[in-house]
Amino acid sequence: MLGLSLALFGAALAAALAGIGSAIGIGVAGGAAAGVMTEDPNKFGSCLILQALPGTQGIYGLLIAFFVLNKLGLLGGAGAVDLTWNQGLQILASCLPIAVVGWYSAIWQGKTSAASIQMISKKPEAMGKAIILPAMVETYAVLALLTSILMLMGVQVG
Amino acid sequence: MSYIYAVSRLRGMENHILDSAFFSRLIDSAGIDEALKALGETSYSQWLTGSANFDKAIDSEILATCEELEKFVPDKELLTIFRLPYDFHNVKVLLKGLFKVRGGDTEGRRYDLLSKLGTIDTEELTNAIETEEYGFLPYGLTDVIPQCWQLWDSTKNAQAVELLLDHQMFKAMLNVAESLKMPDVIQWVKFKIDAENLRSAVRLARMKYDSSKALPFFHDGGTIRADDMARLLNEPQETWSRILSYTDIGSVLGALNEQSDMKAALSDVSKALDDYLMKVLERAKYSMDSPANVLLYLLTKEAEARNMRVALVCVAGGLDREFGRRLLK
Image 1 (tube, rainbow over the protein chains, first blue to last red):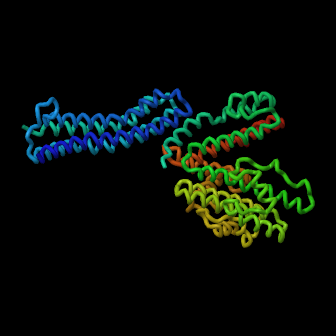
Image 2: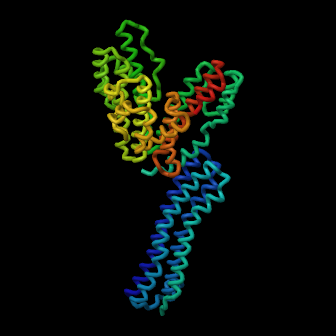
Image 3: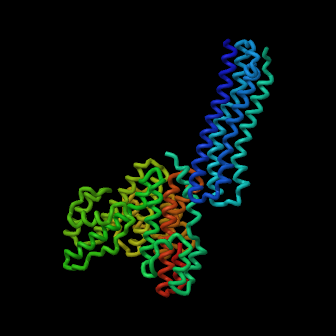
């Protein structure tokens, strides 16, 4: 049972920490978007795209949580597989990259998005560049997602 | 408190700041009517009710900006730092008026010179000063106004009274900035005190003022101590930039030396110091949530209003356009 608990704790961390990071990041970018749109409501479309960017980490965390639940047999009603504490710990470790990197990267991506929103408020023609800047932060969230997936695939259960 | 919303909104508002091309067009207007027509496309138009009162319209625009910012800037004290000099200007106007009245000039009061941009309501301030009930006045005015009266009674020197009020104004500005605990803002206020002291030093040097009696002309609180400023007067002006090279503001004098040496007109020094103070704040432009952006916006708006006044006075008075253009910032 300890193994299953550790594995579920990992899934919970992946979904929760990455989700918290995304919520903060979107909040930060949303504050900037609201400020810009108060003066120019026509920028809603551009602001929305930039505000949504830090939301992906939350999705990555959820994806890893699903992977873990699937691996544990908790989806589809087949019943949970037996796990040793060592296997549970391996699954928990696999969840940490996206949990930690997702959390931090979403917050910083939110800040970069906010700066980009301020940029398009003055230079709407620079929308392309404004998207690239926060997207650079995304790279590290994607790398963490890949790491978590590869680690999870390497854990032998059942 | 987060400034992301406030700074983002200011970024949007900055798009409406009038640029040099507009002022150039304004100053080239054939007459005041054409100039006011050009103003019709701007936010100033809502305050214009005729060609005679553009001065009031400009003040109204700045006041409306302050009131708008008060709605969304988390720390109202930032606006106080901007508005505080207008309070002290009003106190000076009222006191000088009363000095004249006491001297027998019954028409001495100049209520028309009062600015509504101060934080203290002009009517309340007028009542407080005329009835000598200073108890509710903020920024140390409760204590400094009686001192002004004492000084006036003993010296009859209006300039000394102004200086006393200026000392208190900078002290109050620094107190407000320090209460905010915002390093950029505190630094800017200190640099502003340095700039004012340097302006005084240049002025005193031109008058060949005795450096041993110059200390009262300098304000405390800047990055350069007041007595160091007074000692500058013992040195040739050409060496000031080297003496002050350990400070940021020393570079302003350095630039002046390169361009037009220290014999440059006081207005050149003044302009360079104003530009320097703006540059200090402009560093905040690279931050998405620096509170100093609020001050930067207000000062930019104030500079815009000043340019507007210069351009309109130039057009209305039929003054030389090139002269007016040189006065634009």
